[in-house]
Image (cartoon, rainbow, N blue to C red):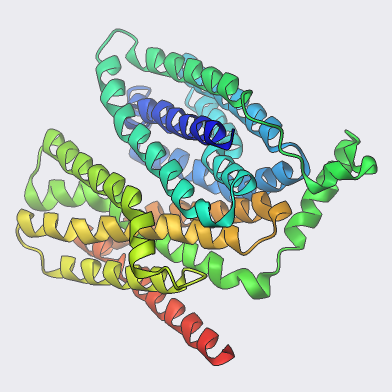
Length: 401
């Protein structure tokens, strides 16, 4: 029975990012066609990540208080209507408001990972979390291919939004095939009230009860890996265009190449853990090693002058970013109790949203002051900080033994 639920979660994760991938590469051009400046496009992109900083812990904690399946179905319905609205509205202000709603409600991947932690034992979680992530990545890589084809049709953006709407409705139906996820509060008869005030107070209590003294370094690892990855990938397109004069088509090939490396890495992660880290209980050593690999790759970018060497640097960077994304998520979920999975997961994704929120502004300042190369190489600083942090944590754990 659990195997069936595993495949359902995989399908939800795949369809979710496939649907988003249909829209993502088209959205910026659509805004420009409506008259938005590059600055306004950047503001709308940052607003999405900014609102997720707030909504991540709230939606995650809500899923701890209520049935996680119900929370997922509600958020999917709101997202379906929001994506449909994007294709219908021509007002930039209304589109901005819709993006805020999406930023608040779009937490499908985090809720899927929380469901994996609910349903499956500790020894299987790393493998299942990895496969959930890789299927989402495959969906996100395939989506733009179909979205680009649809965009060439009359009213292409509206058609893409309509298809995204239908895919989210399909995901709601698929979600209904999952079992109910009984929270600890459901076991208390008094907690089964639908009183909104009680539910909001419970959400606030869950967030307040996070043990920050024991968990701060876990969220710091998430933040450092998130900002290093965001700095690299946000500037990757500009870097290739400015320094190597690549066409948009060839840039797309490089991004597909990166996606293939991500997919291969995530599928191989369970093998990597079994081969090299099977005696390590908490995953910090693995995270430390891949922060180091990311630091080396970022540092070597300082000396890249030919495209072939740039491609060589991409390989270790993408491998390390893929491992860190999964491993830092897993270590956060492993450190919390089962009744706090959604809360900790929500805060974890909010930390990454903070990184994505500040990256466009930080990159713009560095690019204007120095160059696009400086912006992409800037990822070396958070990667090296991750090495220092994890090395300190490992030394501290050694002293405790």
